[in-house]
Length: 431
Image (tube, rainbow, N blue to C red):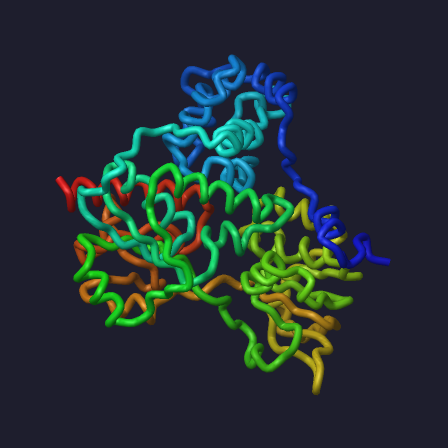
C-alpha cells in the first residue's frame, strides 16, 4: 500500500504536495525574528550568494518595518520570495547561523525572507524609483529564467530598455518548471515575476525562442548588448534508445510535466530513479507523492559521494523512497513494454531491478549547438560559457550568467551572477 494515493483533483494534489516551508503568520514572524542575535559580522550573510543583509532585514521585521525589510532583501536578490522558499537554506544562511554552535535551532531565515517579500508583493509596494523613460540604451535578454529576469531588473532600474525573449509560455525557467511543488507553488512564482515586471518595466516576449544565427544577427543589430540566461538543455541520455520507451523520463522533463499538468502524468507502480543529485531527490519524492507503490533511487557511487544535500535525501526517505548505491545503469529491460533496468556493480556483475517507470536524473546537456552560432564566443571543455569576473563573454557584446555559465547551481547563484553581469553591462555599454 503506497504512503500516498494518486491525486485526482487539485485539492488532493495540493494535499500530497503540501508546502514544506509554510507561510508564517505575523505572530510567528515576530517571535522567530526575536530569536536572532543580530550578529555584527553575520556568518549567515557571508553564506548567502547574493549577500543579503540578513541581520538587518530580520531586525526590520521585528520592529514591524516590513517595507524596509523587503527593500533590504530585494536590494540584493530580486527573487526574494522564490529564494526564501527554494534556496537550500539548510546549508547556506541557516547552516551558518551561530545558533547551530549551541545545538539550538537556527533562525528560519528563508521563511522570514518570504514573509517580508510576500508583504511587498501582495501590497504591490513600489520599492524603487525606476525611470519611466528607458532612454539609456537597449539590451536583449535570451531566457526568462532567474538569471534573465534578475539581469532585466538591474538593467531596467538603471534606465535601460530590456526585452526578454523566452521560448516557453511562462517565465522563470527551472524556478517554475524544475522546482518541486512542495517547495513553492506555481502561483507564487508567477506573482513575484509579475510584481518585478510591474516594478521595473521590462518586456517579456513569450513563445519566441532564439535559435538561429539569423535571429542572433537581428538582436545584434537592434540592441546594444545581449545577456545569455539560457540555462541548460535536455537530460543527458545515459541509456540508449530511451525515446523509444513509454514511461521513461528525463527528470527535468518529468518535473516540468508534473508542474504544468499533473493529471496527464502517468505514474508507474514500481519506479526507479537513476541519479544522486538534488533533482534525483525531487523526482523520487514526487513520484512517491503521486502514488507510486515503490520508489527506488539508484546511484552509481556510494551514499557519501552523492552530490545531493543530506536534507534533500532525508525528504525523499520520509516519503518511503529506498536508496540503492554502487550500481551503474546499463540498459533498459523489456520487449514491448518496460520491465526493468539492468545495472552493473563494482565487481562487474549484472543486477536487474524490475520496474514499470524510470526517471533519469543524470544531469542536463549544455546548449553548445546554439552557442556555437555566436561569433567569438568561447566555451570551455565542459561546454560552459567562458566569462570574465564581470560575466562578460569573449564576444564583448554578450554577457552571461546562471547555469549556462556555472554548469548547474542554485536559483540564488543565477540571481547573483546576473546582477553582477547587468552592473558590468551598464558600466561597459552605457557609461
